[in-house]
Image (cartoon, rainbow, N blue to C red):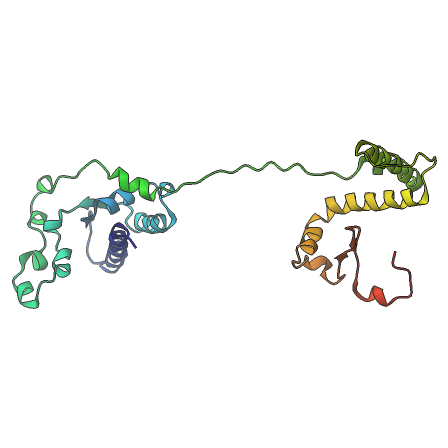
Length: 249
């Protein structure tokens, strides 16, 4: 905790005290209220927009500004600040006849034009230290769509046949040996079906697939189905199905 932040906490405490007193002294007609602090840094923070400040400072400044709305904040020189009397290690005997402690600074009994001059310059270096940096990160994510082959026909066998041909083209471009048999073989048809399912799952069940792959908890909507990834990276349904007498596929 830095000294300026501690001094800001003192101003925050003063703001609560002023709010409490003003609400409970209803019998008195209070015209204007002036709050004093000997911290130029805290004073600069109080007069700054909270958007420029870090969270710790911004939260307290926001409360101070809310509680002392309409009040005036001014700087009191350290040598005339009665609050410092208690922090300077004065003994009770010294405090007995200490006018600054009991009566406050003498300028309070004088016209406002004789009050200590206010420094218009704010401590920029300290403000920069507390300035909140808000980096903006833009992430452009292209939504992956399922294979367009799914919409080429309402006949599944035709779609599987077209997919098999496209997979042959992919194998050829990658330098892999591929069959040139027409129509596609049974193995190619099964591969096409798995590819279409994999593409579809990648689009509509990406969060489930990622959770299973990273051993994280799957969404509650499918948790009871005990999903898992098989050796072909397809999402399968588990649970009591494994006890049924039907084939795995």
